[in-house]
Structures are given as structure tokens and as C-alpha cells.
Length: 95
Image (cartoon, rainbow, N blue to C red; front, side, top):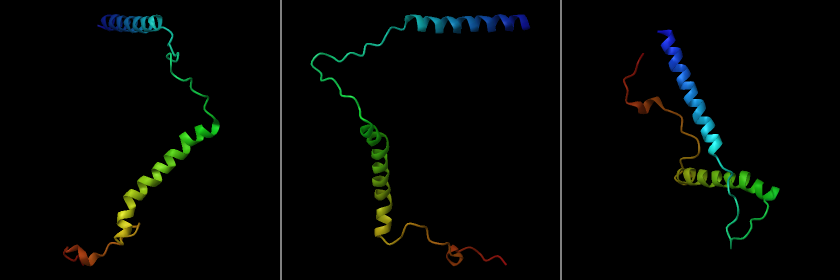
């Protein structure tokens, strides 16, 4: 029984290796040339990178937070939940 398992494991390993070798061997270099008529892109500066990675997500976070929190604040509910009062539960008292 173990001989059959070893044979199947060897067959699986060989076919997996063949698949990896075939995909690596047939992969060609990527063609990344700019099409004719398109402007050539400029290099990105450090400030542009910081703007893209840091500032835009922070601005989006602030805007989304305001959109979610502002209606409750305008209704007078505040930012924090109100403390729970046991009198409003309508549950039987346990003594």
C-alpha cells in the first residue's frame, strides 16, 4: 500500500515540477513600450508619492468619517453612546 502512495506522490511531484518548468520556460519578456502618439510619463517625485500614499487616504478617511458622524451630531446625539439606564429596560426586577 505504501508503495502505491509513494508512486502517486512521485507522479504528483513530477507533474507539478513539469508545470512550473513549462510556465517559466514559455514566459516571454513583458513589452512595456509606450504606444506611438502617447506622451512619455514623467518620473514621480517624492512629494507626489507622499501625496498619493499618505495624504489622499487621510483626506478620504476624514470625509467618510464626517459623512457618517455629522448627522448624529446635528441631531444632538453626540459622538459617544449614552449610558444605559436600567429603568427603561421593561424587564422584571431581580432582587
